[in-house]
Image 1: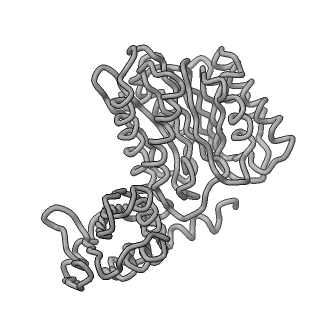
Image 2 (image 1 turned 90 degrees about the vertical axis):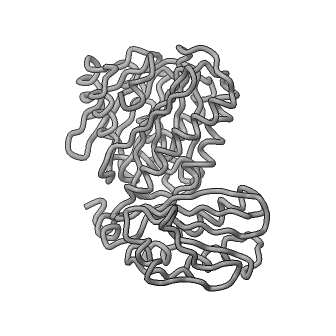
Length: 383
C-alpha cells in the first residue's frame, strides 16, 4: 500500500465531482496539529485550533473547491456543521473529527453537496490502495498529481497524503497534510515531533511566496505497534514529511523543474534555513532556472538579503550534484564554467549548494521554477 492505508486502523474514501471533492479518513488515536500563521485564518482552522486541544482524533473530513475562508460567523457555523456531517458518515464523535477545506476564498460551503457526498462515501471506507487514491484525488485543486509517502521504521510505520501546488510559502504546513502512524506516542511528544518535522520540511517549501489561509497538518497515532523510541519516531516523521514537501515543490503550479538549495556553514540551522528559503523563493532565481540560465549572481544576491550575517567574499557556490556538480564560486572567487553550469540546469531537478563559511548551521529548502503556466493558472483561478 502507498501510505496511510498501510497503517493498521486507517480507512479512507474519497469522491471528486468536477472541482468539488470530499475525502473521509477514519482512524482513532492520539493526535496533534499545526496550522497556518496567516492572520486571515479559515473557519475550519479556527474550529480545529480549539478542538485539537483534546489531543485526540477519530476521523478527518476534507472538502475541496471552497476554502470557507473570510466567511465570518456563517463560516464558523458551516465548519461545525461539516464536522457533524463527517462524524455521521464516519460513525464517530463530531468533537473528534478533524476538518479542513481548500479552494476559493470568500465563498460559503455547499453543505447539501457535502452531506450528499459524505453519505455516498459512508459505506465505502476501506483500507486499500484504491480507497487512499480516491481520498488523495478528492482533495486536489490545481495539483497535477497525488502526493503520498510511507516510511517504515523498526517495528512501526508513518504514512501521509497531502495536497499543495500553489499559494505555498514557509509559514506552517503550506498545504493540507494528513499523517498517520501505528506507533504509540504520548501527545506532548507527538505534538513536538510534528512541529519539528514541519519546521524542517513543510516550512522550507516556497512555490510563490503566498501563505494560505487554510494550511494544516494533522498527525494521528493509532498505537497499534506499541511504544516507540521518541528519537527514532522523530527521524521517521521528518523523513515522511520531507518526501511530501518535495512532492509539493515539484508539483508547483506551472512548474517544470524542482529547485533544491542546501546552505551550509551558517551561524545556526535556522540561519541556513532562512537563506535557503530566500533563494528558492526568489522570482529571479526561479525564472533563471526556468530558462536554464546559469545566472548564479541571482543566488548570491538572494542570499545577501536573507538577513543572515556572512562574508560575501568567503562563500562557495556550486550547481548540480555528484559527477555533474559544477563549482560557480570558490571562497569568493569566480570559477564558473558557463557551458557546464547550463548543462547542470537541463534536468527536472536543479540543485544549488551554498557554503557561507560562517558556522556549522545547515539546512535545505525546496521550490520550483516560475513559468508562464503559473500566470495562466492564477490569472483565471476563480473563472
